[in-house]
Amino acid sequence: MNGISKCFGLIVSLFLFNVLTANAQEISAESFAKVKDYLVGDRINVTLIVKRPENFSVEWKRQNPDPTRLELVDSIVKDSAKENGFEKIDILLPMAGFDSGTAVYPAQLFVFRKHGDTSSFTLKTKPITFHISSITVDLKKDIKPIVDPIEPGPDWKIIILYIIAGLVVIALLVVGYLLWKKYKMRPKEPEIAQPQIKRPSWELAVERLAQLQKDDLPAKGQVKEYYISLSHILKEFVSDRLSIDALELTTDELTDIFKVRMIDGAAKEMLLNVLELSDSVKFAKYIPDTSDHDKSMKMAYAFVEAMRDEV
Image (tube, rainbow, N blue to C red; front, side, top):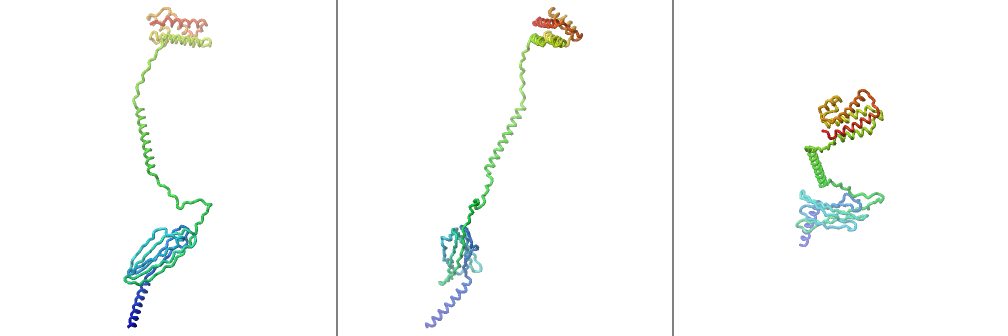
């Protein structure tokens, strides 16, 4: 009886061994890293890939590296995919080494069990050795940024403010131009003529006679010019006093006018004497004596004084 029991137990054991061995051929666990040479502080990606049938469970017996050599720097990322009754699990472990030298990521243990069975078996990955080098610093070179500086984009608030300011300036210029144009086109106020104070004709005559006497034209040989100016001054005075155009009249025409105008006889005689002498000098080329110059000037002054109050 005992022999039969032992024989049966052996058969069962062989059956289970064959089953597990067959499944084990379809179960795998491996670890790898694409790059094994790094600089201090570089990100090191270790990938674990586990493959199992869907009727098997797997337990990861995590083996941590020496924290002084390797350190986990980010969250572990797990991803899985199922196909044809199998599940493939990808595990990404982002790590970094902060000291130069050799760093080892240890072998990881994965325990597999078939659902409804207490037996199990373990797969062990290979350890991964990394070579971490220190960063070479050239102290002679300028410090460079880790990444290129980011050029700031346009500040739209400032741009909008400039646009608004420009529009305000343009508006002010337009308004200023319109106001200026309106001012220029406004009807001009009539200029108020300032009343001119007319000087008495006798005063002007005396002033001009004094200037002519001061110029002393006969002494400069300008006798004809002297008598032309003398007769012109007296005729202008007569034109104003008698309201006639004496400058356009001859001496004979003035004589005829004096016959009908109430003029002082002595004053009329003095004027005609000066005018007749002036005509002789201008037209007959008569050369009077020096005494005639002074006599003519005195008669001119006397005539103006006599006609001062004459109407």
